[in-house]
Image 1 (cartoon, rainbow, N blue to C red):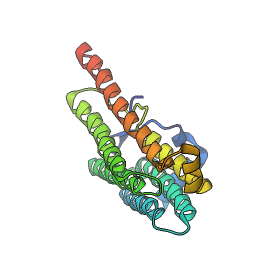
Image 2: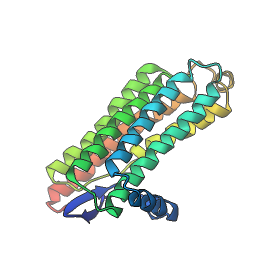
Image 3: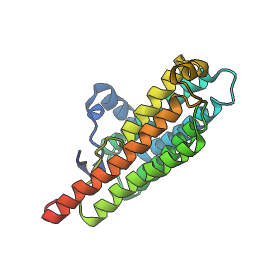
Image 4: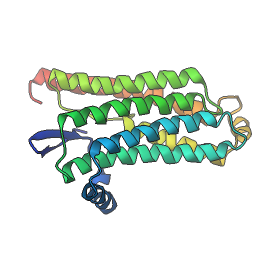
Amino acid sequence: MSARTTQTTGTRIERRPLASRRWRLSIALAGWLARRGVTPNAISLFGLGAGLLGGLALWLTSRSSAPWLFWLLAAGLVQLRLLCNLIDGMVAIESAKGSRLGELYNEIPDRVSDAATLVGLGFAAGSVAWLGFLAAVLAVFVAYVRAALKIAGAPQDYSGPMAKPHRMFVVTVTALACAAAPMSLQKAWLGHDWGFPAIALGVIIVGCVVTAARRLMRAARVLEAGTP
């Protein structure tokens, strides 16, 4: 998928193409926040807080006597972070407050939130820490590839199969599955100590490698042809 661009007060804003931006609820929420003077950067920072707390909630699943509670909390926080990622750009357009500084508020918190979430999943109940660290590194690498290709002259490429929304979808589904199925049941189903979180991280790792390679090949074809 290519990026969708919008002009706002002379600043070119590039956004991930998402169908949810056309939802009435999303449009209404963005308008409501813009009318109350909430800035896009504040929303981005709120999303960062949700991402950090989501990672903490995932870690606490291995420390709590009621892990299901933290699995549900983590799923909610991951989705709250994605909602902030969706709304901040919409508010920037609605309030005409888009800026180049906003790109930093959009990108840097995303990378920190990704790392916190995936590392937290690595320390979650039924997971493996090194898988979380590897997934976090590869998630950042996928974003780096996108940025590097843009600098090289290729169009923004948000394609998957394991872009940010796909990674967070896997984390959310895993959290909900773990809330419903206790670790003892997961061990009985899978036959070893690695539970759903470890398997999810394995899927994310493989998906990130495929995503980075796919974006590189797509950009190479564009750059060789000389037409963005």
